[in-house]
Image (cartoon, rainbow, N blue to C red):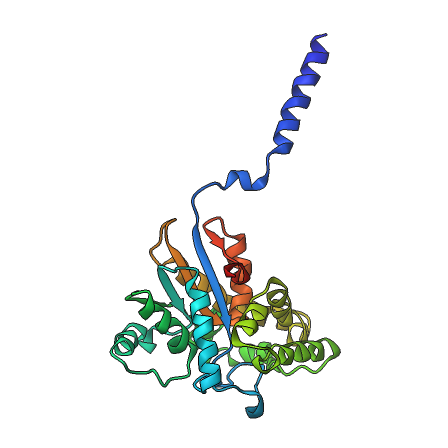
Length: 279
């Protein structure tokens, strides 16, 4: 009888434990965050995916300017209390924000003006947080580059995002299909770009092509360069003073947004808000 009772108690305790969800352990109040992945409105074409001149849109043209307004009003539904942008500290975002509020920079196509500063002005947010960062790859080159140039040159040889294998060609077609000219409006473009599936494949683009260089060189370059930079950007966001009542808006290139989605959804500190949920 005692043996039966013991087995029964063990069974009951394990059954109760098994029913507990993992998320039940992380009930602390979280800070809501909305990541808005964007293409660069002024088309500096510094990214791997270049946009031909004939495929570019002018966000200052009357039609597209109205679409920018629609996009801004949509993002404002999130009601952010803090705004983070892809910018270096040396860009002097807060000085530029003051000038923007005084009527300057309204003719700049850069999304940091057209989206971030416009939203900050409308919602009376007085500070922008610049979150861009150099990677550990940049740091290592500065510290050891001259003495160990052969190591760095060998590791980074042909790492140039110009692969033309079958998988890379699929990604090229995917990126071209994501260009604004293929959508009814800028808002529709952003809803598509910031979808879970779009970010999934955008993230996956870094796991093909150059990633397969030699045995581990491509993988090591991804870790040292691109992934390190995004991890540091995430760390900069963590350093923004916040509590569970804050709502942080992050505006960055969509390549960064794909990685940030993974980091935010895995974090116990933040509540990642889907862009499409603002409808």
